[in-house]
Image (cartoon, rainbow, N blue to C red; front, side, top):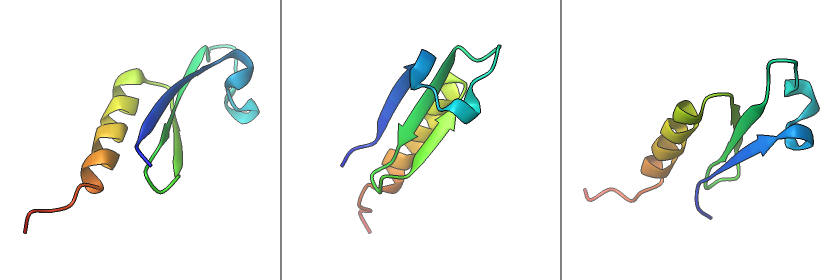
Length: 60
């Protein structure tokens, strides 16, 4: 399974994260299926890259 980043809007946003100032939430799912929700696209991309790098085999 690969790392995925999904942009959530409207009813796709989890109810507990909705609010008057919340228009978009980014969901990052790592290779183990762990979900993380973030409000910032840059932070979501950074989390996805870190999760992807952690799952790469080392060359040692």
